[in-house]
Length: 238
Image (tube, rainbow, N blue to C red; front, side, top):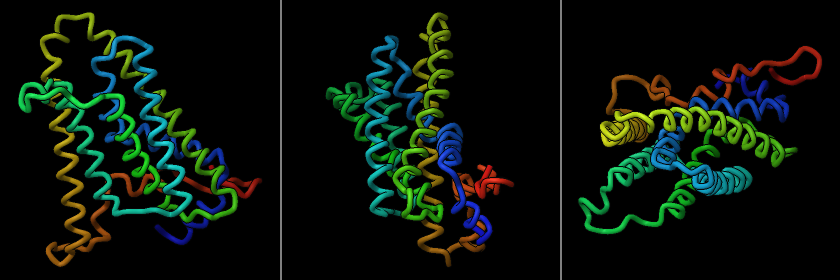
């Protein structure tokens, strides 16, 4: 991240942080894959609201407190754990606990809340990659979180609509298991990617190129992809 980019981030308005949060959620496929797994078999609107609310409360808690108190961890490891949440939900959707472990699956609402805490820590890590100043920090975090929620609502509207239409067809019964196998496979792929990235940063001499060249899939999102730039009249960024 260049000094010019950092300067632009320091001038960001609260609305810019709303946009950044929405952009991160809409393009954060690890978060979206987990949410897709959560709503896959939910048919009642009240159930969707209940589980999404549990997830939202969880990620809002860690996003706020981890950012406020500057709690960080290696982002590759955090994203690796997030990938595990995707694998877990797909495994649960496939009835894996009963089939392979001969046990009842853990309380889903509680697990969604716990996984929300993990996803929130990942969101906080992304946010803390920006040069945040203490003045107005709480409002910036809340603005970012508002953007995350708006992006989440938009993504869920599409997911729920597609799933509702698909359930009306015979192919849903035929391919629902295959869809969750694919979901688990994507989670495993994400896990391997993050572990590879972590191994590169922790053992850079084992690779033939510099760590700076090994870009994380979300790493540029906060500034370059969000296209933060100064506004002409308000010392803020677009």
